[in-house]
Amino acid sequence: MTRTRAGSVTLIPPGAAWASLVHGATADPVAQQFREQLGLPGDRPVVMGGHQAGLWHPGILAKYLAVQALARRIDAQPAWLVVDHDVNAAHELAYPARDAGGRLRRAVWDLSGGAHTPGAPTGLAPPVSPAPRAGPEPADGRLGAALERIGGVVAGNAEGSLARQMALATRELLEGVGDPMPMLFSSHLARTDLFAAMVGVDEAARMRESYNRAVGRFGDQAGVRALRVDADGGELPVWSLSAGGRAEVSDRTLTSVPRERLAPRALLMTGLVRLAGCDLFVHGTGGGDEDGYDRVTEAWFGDWLDGAGLAPSVVATATRTLDFGGARVVTEEEVERAKRLAHSAKHDPEVLGDATAAVRKRELVERARELKEAGGNPAPVFGELQRELGAYRERHADEIERLSDEASRLEAARRDADVLTDRTWSFALFSEDELRDLRDEIEAGF
Image (cartoon, rainbow, N blue to C red; front, side, top):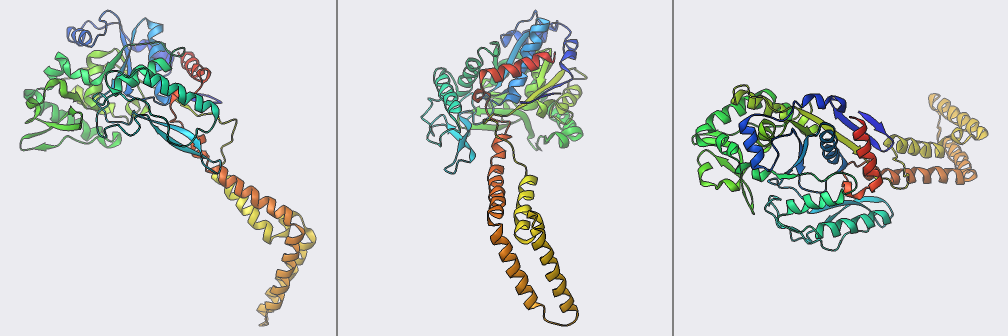
């Protein structure tokens, strides 16, 4: 991992080791056919990454840029898999705004203007025609200009599906930062001969049994559940897609769904592309780290396909936060410390260095204690103590108010921390120079 002022970049293993994991173009005829059917070359190694459709954050962009960086160095074909069978809010763009009190907050621009169909896979959802923002104003003018540019680029790529629109918009927004590369769509994987051979009624029981064995080994740590088993056979790791959403597929319903409406679920998707579609796959931490879901995929495919190996996978991610004019992140500890100081200053003259008042307070407290122990009434002494403290507060009113105001200021600033430290803002809200810095840092890792 490398760290900079702006954030960090993580490459696992170190980028310099990635080239040694790629052993040239595959000679396997099944893989050659699979790649040809997806529009990939068969005479060069393929380096692939992917994610859901959308204007993703810099952590995902790191995968995209790492794919390109390695492909350039080893003369491989880069490729990006758009997971268009997923149901995600690709039509929404979060941005930092300010409330009436000037505090930072998270706002969301619905690019569809409310016309998006909930539950639709992005590959079957229609493209959006960006509606004017109805939400609060962006936090500063630079962000406002970025949003204007994003809206124009998205509007200019309104073709096909929402997933295709966002893929093309992403490519255009990254001009000058990343190189164009082929975009594959996960819903097209079901159209290949390899998918048809693997996802058939005759293979369903073995597929499910080996899947569930792998989940039994690694599923808990990866957050993957077993496939349901019932009298009809059970659930398959496949979706049936429609404009209304995704439906489970079972042994019984498999043959009734047209193949172009099928799509592999997450583990089958990455298993397919690592089995035959690429020679190295670039994951993020969710799929590729030690507890990632692809540990299940590897165990499953190895068991199901009699030890078949998958292309090696690596991890790339990054953290970048937006710059709000050098605004500092205030910690909870700072707020609590300021509150304690403001409170103590009202009751303890030593906090403000008033030695005379501090001595007088100690004397009165001691006298009240002695009276109480002797059975006397300490109330008059406590009354005198309150008068002394009242006089002390009058003398130091400005200082006490300053400490109270500072505690209030820090508490208000603390509420900005979620925005200041958020690493999930779209890459399109960052300047081109910031994105080039990320690209250069990733390339330096190789």
